[in-house]
Length: 346
Image (tube, rainbow, N blue to C red; front, side):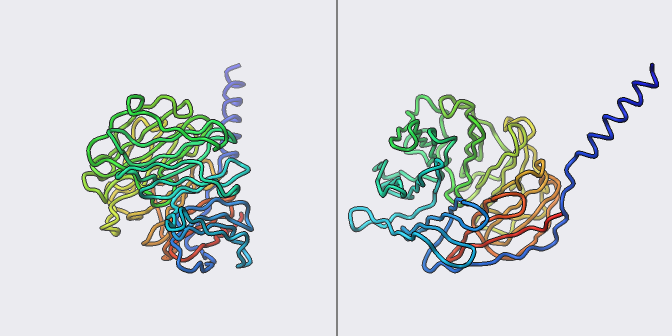
């Protein structure tokens, strides 16, 4: 009987090992660029491997096709004089929504050409926008009082309401977020994580679509307005990664990246003093068991095949953001350009 159990356990172990994902070894990548004139593009939503929706700093939005053509380009203006600088873009599965930075904050349903939210305040500055599902969405921004600015919708984006500060954790003076890549926010099912920087680099978390919140400390560099967490991603409800640094010192690589194994409660620095340096966006590659990760920024593109513990720089191309379609295809965006990345298949 004992030998039977020994053989059984060994077989289970062998099966689990054989099913374990084997990461790709990637030393370099080639990114196909598409020129977009007079547009800083920090937010994209992939439609599929052949087209991506984008919103830009010049009020433009539309579809970039992988044959180099554009489709459905439109320019948004407000009151005939304000050109919105879009840093956030999201879809509820049917319509696309884009939000501008600065005062006034303007949130548009681009698909219906309507303004669905406006906020006027000298401190207003929204950083990121996303949807949980077809009905529930969330936007986050810098504090106008003593809490992060958080908007919620429960009707697919038709109406948006701001959570009062008494229902949110207090922020520290000088704590804010970064509108660098629309990835200072991440949702999975009903859970959302928001990340901050400045005087504090922290992770805010809600497990009930934004109704109640907790906040957790991180070891990421903090203390100055240019320092902190610029991007967050989660492979599942437990395993996540944060990355940032100091955009004024983009080649520094200390205390700028960390991982969690408990859903964001605690964080451990990784590859400290090693590549990559400052990055504005980090994303797990889908369907790679949380092992393959890409980080992009003004100093190039870096890749890890072991969950962020070690990295290699695979391109010197400068991009602000990267979003994956699937395990082999991704779209990127940067200054006056959109990029298409195709990874090697096994």
